[in-house]
Image (cartoon, rainbow, N blue to C red; front, side):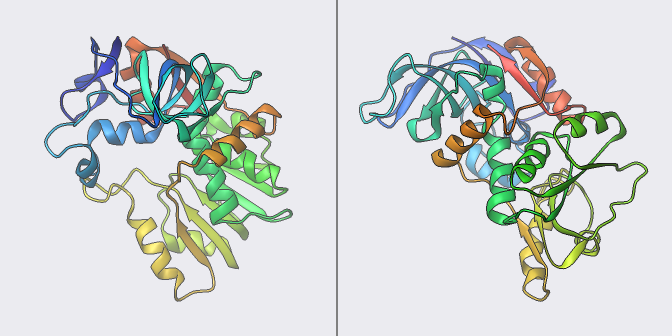
Length: 320
């Protein structure tokens, strides 16, 4: 099969190449998926680059243990493992697998759900990881309620775009913060207010802040919160090779022990029931995946680079 592979850690254009490799072998609880589309999320870069360094504890210290990146996928089940009873060959699915920048990928049956008929493979492939992170940040960590004022920092990105929509679906008054070029996109997501971070102050106070990749200090976030407000820190791309921007998420719960506000880090859980909720929300039109651009498999490196450069409006997807 054709796949985008890497032999060493580094940047996309330096280490990724298209090659012919064997199809993956599935375990008893896994299925083989013919990949139609594969979403590009921030984690794809971290795993490819091996950054921050603690990532390599799982992926391989000197070089990647497995050559194919990509986890978001939508496609058709080709074969099922001996223990799989919920899926059959021919089923159209989406979810999270391993090595989705390829013609075939393996995935645990428990991390896949049926693709709604009104969603294209491209739309479905953009949902899983970013959508799960947004859903769990808004619903579970921040516990957003109707009538609350919510600020989404990075509202035009993959997680941020879904966070705006999920918060709106829960009845919140949502303000999105983004760059000048992306203001129209955030408005189209249903945000009640849109702030341009190059010229508009954050304002507030907000009951909830979902920070999907900003670099503002915890002190700055606290000043924009109500006295008992919640801030959920999804990530940041600053912080170097060791922590890679995760230091705010590490400090936040410690600070929360001594203040009335709640400052929380967020790492998404890959739960099938939440994938099904995303499928339902998308099928009913409550949320949608804003697709900036699609790339053929041969241009996967360019897709990852566009995301890394911060030029993506919503999501980019690789089409196989």
